[in-house]
Length: 138
Length: 206
Image (tube, rainbow over all chains, first blue to last red; front, side, top):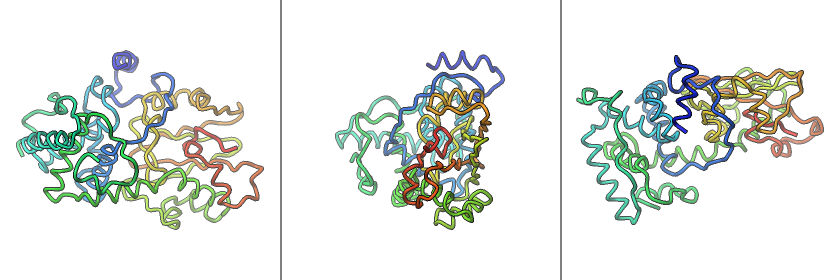
């Protein structure tokens, strides 16, 4: 599917990755999906940080989401994009550091495993193209 | 329940089954760090999730039925949506303004967000998946009638279709037309006629 989307986007080479208005990605899949708990919590954290704390604006969220390339934009779900953007903004603003997060991720995996929850895959990768070590000297 | 914080979040059955994905682990880690640092609390997160559970199609139907039955409210809803919603104790927060677009015998409105997923969430709740999909986002601005047909909405040729592209700062809500045969119905009974999709414009109350 990602490959197909890239081909479709080639009809509008000047559009950025999220700017899909007027293209043709096919029929609408109308299946409803309930949000998972973790997705609701991502939503809640972002709204609290943006609305109540003024930690960042939705514009900043979008800047991070839209700075990823086509493959990653198309390969991630909606709240995966939000979750990754939340991580990047918190690190960018020095609220949390990469090292702290790496340690906590290991702890979180352990917490889940000890609660008999399987954990799949590696940590969510950093996008070094838009996100390099220099941005994380906080 | 998967971790020691989830006891605050027992608002409905747990959907998070199967192995935790890397993103679910990331959410857990970010939340733990923010709570440890005192940036936010688990109680705040639960409160927000509980609040979102009260923002849904039923609330949208309640407001719309009021607009159908109370001309003064309808004018306020169209002219100053924020104030009209506030008068029904619905706070839409500070992040965006809401604007109501009214269907008429000649105009059918559809809402969309081509760039992302902007939606009147604090009235209607989380947007449906298809609203956030690249298929709906890409095609609705180019061939709205074809997309509406997929949703089962057939519009006569004489009806103009207006597509409203929402932004982070301005989100639209459709005020559908009241079905003729319901003219004298009370608001409570009218609510059953009003679906979420009719407030997006991908359905028409009948």
